[in-house]
Image (cartoon, rainbow, N blue to C red; front, side, top):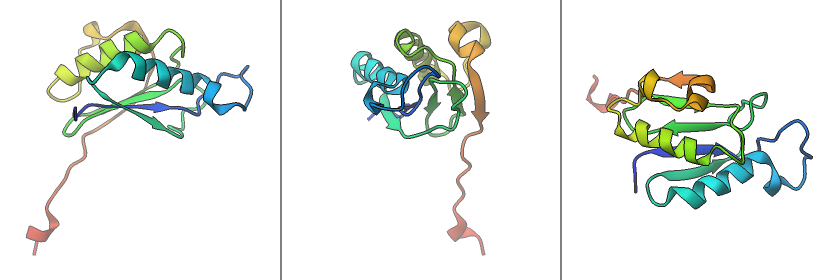
Length: 127
């Protein structure tokens, strides 16, 4: 299993999309496109909500020891290849920080959040 996880909000929908059917929402379509083109390079994970409803579609890149990024305002039907290129850059980075000049434009404009790596400590060693 690859350590890079790409989370895709499958409940994302554009303002003009109906609530049902859920599997035809923009986020669900983006998830299908990513899983179709990703091969085994990344673990593509569908999630119910990333709480960025005002900026559909939303995805997140995460990996152990790396910064986590959340991106929004991604067109469902044309973003898969751009996101996979960004995920390649993310995977190649030591800490998850993709140099600004190397980022695809959608990842420059669509940054919603950058979250520091989880700091894990062994509390059993503390007295």
